[in-house]
Length: 382
Image (cartoon, rainbow, N blue to C red; front, side, top):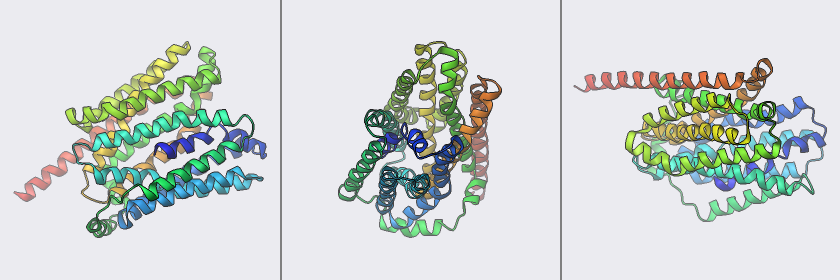
């Protein structure tokens, strides 16, 4: 996942300028960014289900191949529509990566070490997003197509490593069990207590995406920060989040349980949103955004761990739905944040506090319904 996200991150700072070079309007650029997340939203649960039936490794090979293909298509694009086709293909196929990797981690970890494994995946993703954009920015100076070629070759290297080194994690007998599980629809999953955890993730992703879309404008208006300084700030935030996910999450989940860590993460994120309202310099921006990043770093791996502990098989289906809700937040968040910003500059961060509190409420509802179902099951057993 580190290599996948490095490749993905390489193109992030380049896509807007590359698309404009091919004649994209601001609206078309927004659609180009959104279509990728939309394809992830639709197809992540499907790939997760398929990985439950035929195994993790083949689906990872499909997902990484899709990334490589989309990057090379964009590198050689001469028309804007080719970029759209590449993003659609890339979103469709690479939607397989995250849910399958999380399911792989669930396959090979005990319940005791589940949160640690999910945290390491989160740390790998965070570090990939730190190094990728930096590499893309450096190699875009001579040609805007170069970062796409680098991303494509990075994906090919990852593909070779998966094909030659990675072992299949899903036992053969689990495939039959998972095939039976697939008869349960996504609607049935949402009606269960797990539905509250999916909604919790959606609100967290929604507030994060709104922040990412507007913070550059906010920091410029309030503290006069330029793009180079913002790059350093997001890098510091990324390192803080990766540090938390790579070590602290697993230890705290062992000590207190995933539920308590999720609650702590939500409250720290809400605090981070509130503190952002007081940004007035580079250092306050770096500190307050890092506090938010630490809180956010607690949440995702803990939710992934808790979800996979609540089912005995079919991890791909569960993690696929989680990825889908994450994508939904990333689709709605940027335009929502932009709209709120035009009304009142601090509004995206004020709303972030309230969205965090709603996410906290969803966790309370999850525990209440889960406890009620457990009590009913216990009475039936007795």
